[in-house]
Amino acid sequence: REQNEYYVERLQQLKKERNAIILAHYYMRPEVQAVADYIGDSFGLSQKARDTDADVILFCGVHFMAESAKILNPDKIVLMPDERSGCPMADMVTGEGLRKLKAEHPNATVVAYVNTSADVKAETDICCTSSNALKVIESVESDEIIWVPDKNLGHYVSQFTDKKMIIWQGYCNTHDLLTPEEVLELKRQYPNAPIVVHPECRPEVVALGDYVGSTTGILKYCRETNFEDYIVATEEGVRYMLEKEGPTKNFHFASRFMVCPNMKVHNVKKMVRALETMQPQIEVDPEIAAKAKRSLDNMLAVVP
Ligand code: 13P
Ligand code: SF4
Image (cartoon, rainbow, N blue to C red):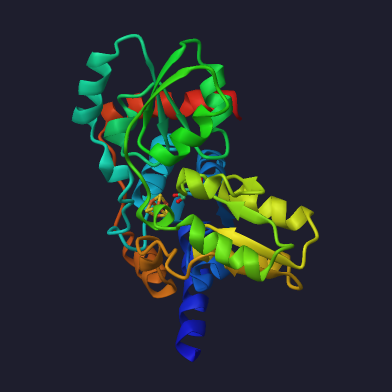
């Protein structure tokens, strides 16, 4: 504990010296969320990264999120506490694979979930996150959409649009493992509890949701409703903020295995080391970054 206090103090000191801002995703360990300047979902983090006037962004999230921060605000130094924090779903599609699919559907508009590498974003027309996917899809002119990489989010939004969606078959290892049986078992125990679901879950799980939405959407729903119990179908890191905002409510996570190991590699000690050494820095090839930025900017024009 004393050691942790030491690191927290050192972090505050370094933050001032470097004029740094700490951005953290809701899936971070509680100790990381506790020292962040801003905690958000992938969309909120992009907006914050774009708008900050700090010199350094210490980004506590997975690689594609830090990469997006660098692309949106290239003059800033973007650091990650641990560079190994990747997203397996983002790795399920490559620029080369997407180019092949595009060649088969030359008239389709390519919509990319932000959970993609800069290489892939560079091949796409417009990005989206789970908080704005439908708005983005409805904003494009074409009736044919290539959607990468999440098949579950793709299936979810395809129910609300008349556009033809060609859906890449990627998925999130963490969300996709949850089964409807696990959710229904909890529902038997807490029959009055609403089920809140992240759309990266399987369609059979999403179909059970009383509320379906991004991390920020889930938090808002739980903040604005007044149930004693909630059944939560998303990554367990969200518990920290749910309990902070609703200390008298009970949040039952549908599976204890819904942990994104990639999000958990960051800790306060590594944050201190990153600000001390100013490493590891996230860099993106300028040509790719320029193309990827267009796609991110297009999203931010639809949902500023
Ligand atoms: P959010 O857009 O809800 O932050 O989701 C990002 C993510 O990686 C979820 O697994
Ligand atoms: Fe990627 Fe899933 Fe982890 Fe989100 S929870 S970063 S989609 S692996």
